[in-house]
Image (cartoon, rainbow, N blue to C red; front, side):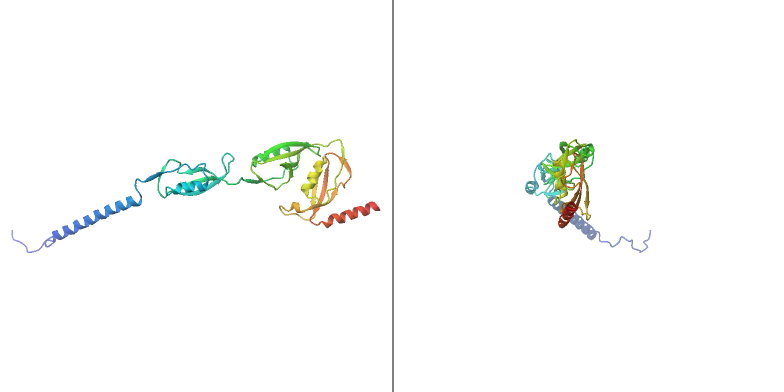
Length: 276
């Protein structure tokens, strides 16, 4: 059969040149892949792990020093409060102790608060004893001794004490603190003299009345006190007036002001009325 004289597409291709370049490309690829493999193995320290130490029970400073020896870092992610473990110590960790991790891993911990949690004492006056007891317990406070005193009404709280001192609403107490309650048992049969409350804060007036088996009634302020300012006000007049005799358990109303001159003015008026 005679030749047509036309060249096929593959004629004139230098296969040796192509094969050489392909071989070089394959060698470069294999070498690059091998280098990358060993670099990653070195970078990630494949197979080189350390054991996570037990951190629970340690304080932050000691735990941080311990982890630094194995090139581990510590991060506090939360805090809690528990009376069962020392303050400021670690109560939980992740990853857990004895697990294995690589260098430069972060260990996350939960720490018990360094200081006890504080709660604000609620208003318990004129609250039933059972309700006051439940309120204190729900806030993390404990009910201590219960003292009964003559009062206008039975089974209502007429006073609160902490470590032997009279306390009022708004006081900040450590969680778990013990609050003693003074509870009314109704009016007594004895007559007592009303003490002079002039110049006293509401806390002092309440304690003085309780010592006489009397209770504090309505408290009227000449200006509305802001939160926490009640102790800046002092009694300038009261009802019944001092030295009047009333039955045990009765209440005494007071009027309070931040103006110390008000009490003097009231006393002058009282003296003038008695004179005439």
